[in-house]
Length: 421
Ligand SMILES: Cc1ncc(COP(=O)(O)O)c(C=O)c1O
Image (cartoon, rainbow, N blue to C red; front, side, top):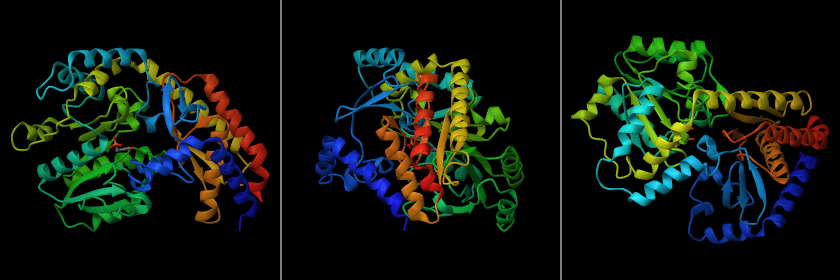
């Protein structure tokens, strides 16, 4: 089955293997210490993942000495490009002043005020990751409502122990009482909600655009429906904007003019340092003024706080320009792919967040198509996520996008006929 496709993928992988002997050797040695040879499952792919030694601007350089234009941008956390001088200066200054004091510091209030103003949030607290922020948002929603059930969506991802790929709660998820509904499907979501006993739904946790699930925007009607349903049921509506907050100065919620009760933030907001935040209505967040504790050794760590304050270099204008460039890239790639791959490769997304959509006659073929694109692009010096996710940074320029579109044109030229067969 799929002999020509398999042969093409094998040829690309063989070239990748011979071109990256140091990445390969380091992967083999890491296998002794780390299950699967790494500590971030998403970075794992066969035959071995590229190992990166350094990065600057929009370029990453592998341990094997090859440079790649970075279209992954740390799964959207790398919004400022690599080593932005303003961020670097702030981090160096923080290092000079001493790192982590076991005390409240001067930067956390400044960052909180900036994020509060930008996202129109009453009160906010920091974590080390958006995973923790999602965990805390759900925890406080349960206490606030005195209820246990949580509505989530198929394809949703809110962190390692909060993943719902394929409409299933992952086996290692936090064991909440989940109700899993199809994403962007009002009738079926309404049907599931109507089955719930009264006063049992604590929270609705939703990404306003599925990020990890393939950069699939929800319709505004669906999100409006969730707003209304949550209000009617007395549940806390939580928008996970860890990825989508970059799509508009006030987050996707502001762009769509739908106000959740709570928001989860993360990724780029600490200038590339580890970060997460959750915040929302004052009466919910004020539970942390006494009734609830939210501790965390590194919640106010000086490097994240300094990176976050320096990330204040971002303006609505810069953000808009990046998202316009992303829209241009997606539309151009869509144009190149249209009708050329027998529908096996498409692209989806919004602004500076996008993902290839792969399909085949079965999972094996879909996987091969994914690998064909991934290793083709690597061979062209372009780095994206293995699963097809891409994001832009503020240092990406039209020339980078043109180079990417050119590589997709060569993909179509080389493999289009084979894919259409
Ligand atoms: C929407 C969303 N929520 C939460 C997370 C988890 O973020 P982190 O990796 O910072 O824990 C992610 C990560 O990709 C995400 O995309």
